[in-house]
Image 1: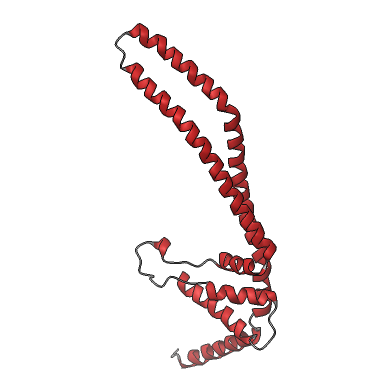
Image 2 (image 1 turned 30 degrees about the vertical axis):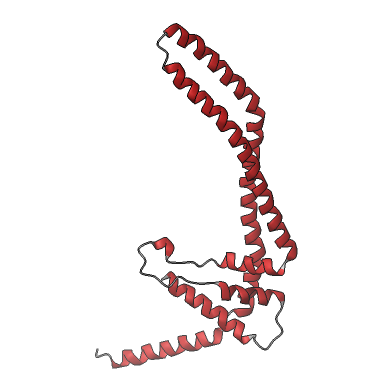
Length: 206
């Protein structure tokens, strides 16, 4: 059903675009037209995985076309991606640093567990525990900053989604205004259907 609806939507968009073929195209027209060319419906509707049947995202397709037309928007996206990659690299440097300490304490605990002398085990377990506590204190400030940056990353991702929606909304609304079908053909069909209904009813034996 979704596939049929998708084809109907595409047919409507294409009909509208063809009707404007001989007119000079505005920036918005070009964006919508190019997006239609990019929109695809996966043909294998018999796939056992419902999620893999369709690849139809008008918002993403319109946004990709907008990026081709709007340099400022393209620069914003590129800058955001670059910053997020930089954050990823920064986080990785801490992860490498932290893993060495965590691995050490894990290994130390294994050695302590192998001690047969319970007095020695208790004494040096306390020593290792104090070291772990000192380490936790050393990295507390970094962990706080990382937690804050993780939250900011999530907020930025949400804002990017909102940006995508708000920038594409104007274009789909423009299409809706310009491509809305005239009511007359629908009224004509409705009238013909009523007439046909009456014609059939006359033939029904009472």
